[in-house]
Image 1 (cartoon, helix red, strand yellow):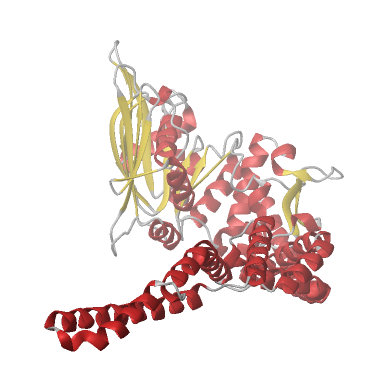
Image 2 (image 1 turned 180 degrees about the vertical axis):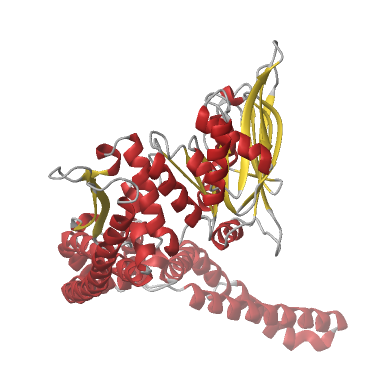
Length: 551
């Protein structure tokens, strides 16, 4: 519910602070006094397009602040956008617009986007008027309005639709994958056979390269080892001659101490030479290679690397690639079975969705008939005796099915006997349209509505009993909600629980629009003015008294 509105420097309004209450509030004033400015200012606070033309001449910036008691839906939207509101705390929306066109929006002093403010405004206030192309007039919202009237939930249908859509996407993905795989069937079979025949192993490249390097080193030093072995082991080699010298020295070593020392030294040399012979044999065994083995390892290493390059992987990844390609090849064989399972799952999901959607359709058709009767009951008092209203619930093409079901819902009217039905906005004249809006709103009122409804000159072009009927219905709407009406009708104004007078004044240099709340006496005078025109007569005052008493 709207509790207050503060306007600064909007067109002809310099400073304005208004308080609002529940019930029916009426705004009256002479033509051109600025009633539209007030609604434009409120629209700005609710997220309408920021127009620099709203900024009062000579100032840099205009601002509008509106305070609300938020609805549960508004609180939910705030929570989902991390704009937390304490229990019992007012919701304050503020919008500024600069003379150069720039604008900013705030919710409880936190900056927000204009889009979020517009979404929030739609949950706080409904605005209805002769030229309104949104709300009840816009067919895009008729399905949701009918569901509210029917107290129908679309949750089950939405869940079934999402399940059907997810299964359909999985099927399409599987079909695409199978087509791609089928295209590669022959290549996969050849690649798997080739890789399995080669049987690459993880770490094999390093092992082959290491063995090849060892054998290549053995090949290089083989000749040197032979030469060293000849020098040490041949009959004319060094060790043979040392052993001969040792035998000679052994016979004569006792003849002189120096000979004994010489024999000992030769023995040590023989021992070291023997150690050298052992190490040479060890090295020869370690470095020994089979030329055929070297050739085989080199060929295997070359083929391993070539195969890795062919498949654009590292040699150590060939083993895993073998399993991956084999799995893809096997998937082709099992692909048809997988598609069959998904096709059955999609058929089942579609049946579930269609069953839920058909049940929702039946609820909508039944609710549409009740809504038609409820609106028809409101048309006669509004002097739309010849008019007819109907709710169309028609099937949508399958491509347009969605979480809302499979129906197109639209409200249509016929204003004259025998005339064809058509959309509200195209068939009804301005006055008829406003009364249709009111009749529809009254019929829908008990089934959910915004806490605040604004009707802009919805009584234009009517008077007498019709205006009284409009006032009575606005008053009825205001029993459970806040209704604000801009009116030229004294019959409607008399129904108000509060009455605001909008006036324009000028000091010769500056023109200003002001708004003030009327007490009982001033309210009587204003209703009398509305009845008589420029000159308020006693007869008009008496008639105003009768209207107020009747209300």
